[in-house]
Length: 248
Image 1 (tube, rainbow, N blue to C red):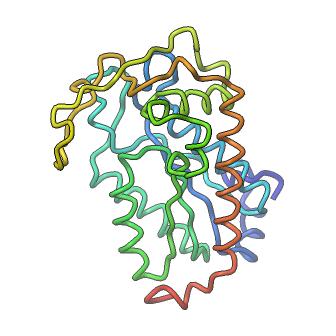
Image 2: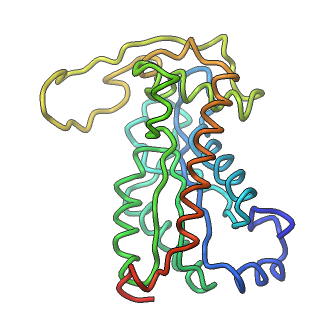
């Protein structure tokens, strides 16, 4: 295809692609607060750029990003637009089943927002029974990144995420407005899961240190994440879905 983004080519090019390929990349994210220095669309903007670059280098197609996700915990910060888990699951499921009609059997979801993960995995489990192999990639979990960022720099809207969005979209980030805030922990040190809202933990929306962010550091993150995503895509290309899924 002339462009790796499926939405930017006419349908004859899509027909040609699907006649030879059974794999697609789907970037998803959210529209939610990321401090006073980052755009609300940080999660889906990052996911899309990662998906697009990896798609270009591997010859696969990517879809345009899904911009809304499961992020009601950020709702106290205006501009946050969220959907319910049920709506999100159904939407992602319908996208994947639509792709299945095109002959797609392998989908790699590039997830830019951690709050989406449980829903994405549930969809992946259910659609596996219908012959679709879906895997989820999250860039911030990569072990290699710990060599470049301290734990306090790896939180929400902190230096690692801010550096990446600053590298990819320098015109959308204001590094003069970064701040450092240690999140409040109601049950600190206790082995419990608590569904707290962001406002309970931070006033600024930042979890940790964001003042050390830079575009140069973001370039490192981008290169590491794209390299790993390419590796995953190449592995998926070789997989026979019939050997894994219940139906194909």
